Amino acid sequence: MSTTAPQKFEFQTEIKQLLDIVVHSLYTEKEIFVRELVSNASDALEKLRHLQVVEKEIFDDRLDLEINITTDDKAKTITIQDFGVGMTQAELVENLGTIAHSGSKAFLKTLSETGQKNASLIGQFGVGFYSAFMVAKSVKVYSHSWRAAEAGHLWTCDGSGTYEIEECDGQRRGCKIIIELKDECAEFSQEWRITEILRRYSAFVGFPLNLNGKRINTVQALWLRNKNEIKEEEYTEFFKFQAHTTDEPHLRLHFSADAPLAINALLFVPKENPERFGLMRTEPAVALYCRKVLIDARPKDLLPEWLRFLKGVVDSEDLPLNISRETMQDKALVDKLNKVITKRFLKQLEDEARNRPDVYKIFFQQFGLYLKEGAALDYMHKDQLTKLLRFQSSLTAQDELISLTDYVGRMKEGQKEIYYLVGTNREALESGPYVEGFKARGLEVLFCYEAVDAYVFDHVREFEGKKVLAADSAEVKLDPAPTPPGSEPLSEPETKELAQWLKETLGERVADVKSSDRLVDSPALATNADKMMPAHLRRMMKAMKKDGEADEPVRVNFEINPRHCIIQRLAAIRTTTPDRARLVAEQLLDNALIAAGLLDDPSKMVARLNKLLESV
Ligand code: ADP
Ligand code: MG
Image (cartoon, rainbow, N blue to C red):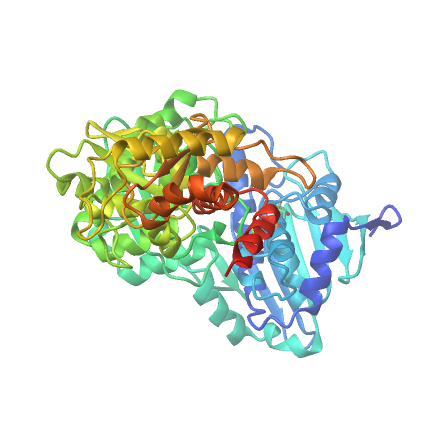
């Protein structure tokens, strides 16, 4: 029936890679290809339902919006047909031949970033249409677009690097995908097997789903039903269907509101943070509906950026049905939805934190980063988000977390500031010179292990009227520490003289040298003299530098502990063995820089240390 000769096309390189992985994967849950193709069919029908509202002319307009699956165990084929939007020739090339869509892109990126060559991630990402090639010898896609003026086409591929498209008359609207199964995958041409799979994954498809002429599902918009009538399993199944996952959700929020807008929303927090693999950013995935008609599956502005981990559905009767999918013209309305939903979700988190702290803690461990991002960047919700943050501290047990509210509630009398310290882990922070002074005075220090924490506190500078201060900043002023029994600190004039000598000896490397109030067990500490460049920021900048680029020289404020024996001895040998004293001074400074994460080049230090060791 073809009116023109088949035309041969080459897949984009990324698709070739993807196909190669998919075709050769030993991934055991091959059945997810059914889920992927059914969900594409459902997407195509959703799009068509929307077009029916806004377009005058639609090809084959009287067709029912449904999905028909047929199996043929003799021919070893399975066919999935929908009467959705279909694809033109150009769309077949664009959608099936290039990697324009998110799921597969994310999949490939993760494979390359994690260096994994295995396909166990296929199920998590849903490589969409291409998953068919896990089971197929060949795939044929017959399609006719909803645009009446377009011709029908047949797209064919056997999983190698090329595919063919030819014109093809007599097509109904939508897509018909015929999969010729590999011999070892013949089970997917068995009706019982597909019934089982559809029951598992596709119970919530919003359109009639028929297998060999028999209806499989009952269509229902779960989010519009009354909460009290919905079973726990139904929610779970709905989440799995929506989020393309086999995990259960961690949290759920189902609410309806009448004012200021009529809203029915069903939102889920997944179990795991999908960004855990690294740089890959999750795309928003809360779909926007108006009276069960999908307006946009991935609206960008429906929720604030930091809520991009949420899955689910928002349905609002107040949206005009002809709202444009591309531009969402009615920005004000979407903004309003955004506000209402964010408020409800934050309240839910507050309730969880109060009533089910263990559940909240697990949530926070996975998704705390997003809340931190929000606390730093979302001015409108900053205060609420800051209260939801949790930290370890110098006074908590290893796995205990506290809030800033807890911190303020147990501040020492007279304490005016909230202290935090950023470092790689608890041990590093506790063994450094900064915490001891706070410990000795019974002051709590929040422990932060992520660069984003410092970023948060650059934005959250105050909490409940208390200034938030980095424990390693030069601004920290503590009351003088009690002198440990049995030791006699350097006198004030002696300390002053030593400080003066150190300043001359260390020259450019120090901005200021002074006696420290906060040190207890360590001889000295360093704080970055450049106020605009706290240590954590400098570390970040350094990490971003290319090889060979010179480091900005650091200048620090150097604080010495007149109660410490090394400092006392240094004061004594300063005049008797000045060369040796000079080496000790340099080494003390380097040690302090290491603790501060500010030492750029350790090579000089090693030479010096060896020299000091010579006299052993
Ligand atoms: P995704 O669904 O995440 O976009 P897929 O690989 O599943 O990725 O599908 C790629 C694209 O092919 C879809 O975005 C859609 O444009 C198109 N497509 C796939 N199946 C159909 C279908 N049954 N009807 C119309 N378009 C389809
Ligand atoms: Mg898909």
